[in-house]
Image (cartoon, rainbow, N blue to C red; front, side):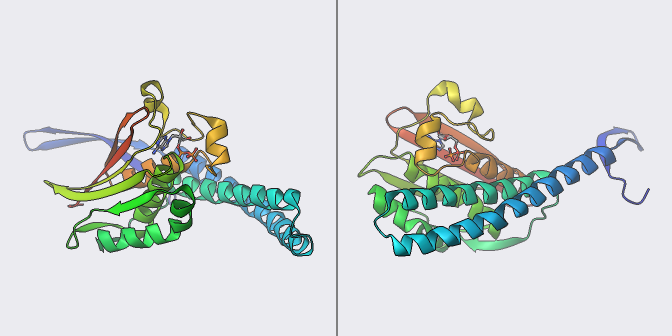
Length: 253
Ligand code: ADP
């Protein structure tokens, strides 16, 4: 039928004959759509009262600027809003509805914009940002998705860093791949956690992540956005020394 979705599972070539194994994935597609619609509806329903309560608390904060409880409550609401936004982003990336809009991106400049959005976090944590990307380095990627990738990687690189530490970004080409590397001088990730680190809501230290404003969805968003480009991600880490995330994005899609 019209809405049916098919996936070519196998292509066998024998001389001048070709055999295709095609499977009907309509029900899977419908299930993904249902999941996405549900997340979107729930997110919307949660955001309306959340904005109303935020507004009321902001008014209360003006009347009682020294109330610790009100400021804590506002902070918690901000975290909730971030969680809802991240859930929405992830649901869209996972559902297969997202299309790639590829453009040429000047990475050095682009990174400066991402850094600018996070400058307060860098300053608060006393972490230095080193943009080592060559002025002339250009890569082909989807701008919005590259933003999600870099924002989440940089946020983590600050969040799990140490005072006086640094975050370094490099970019280069390897054959048909553009490589972007984000490395930090932070706490590192114990080996046994590395295989799970990209799973949603997986955290090495739940308390620490939440205290530092994490939702537990950042790296899942990164992995999905990289995969949408047909790329891959690598991680090297040493406890107490730091972590290096490397993303590979094919340049001939
Ligand atoms: P969160 O919102 O908790 O940061 P993420 O999905 O972004 O969620 O990351 C998952 C977990 O991986 C984090 O809770 C943290 O334990 C670990 N992690 C991610 N990035 C780093 C990093 N640069 N250095 C150390 N640990 C990290």
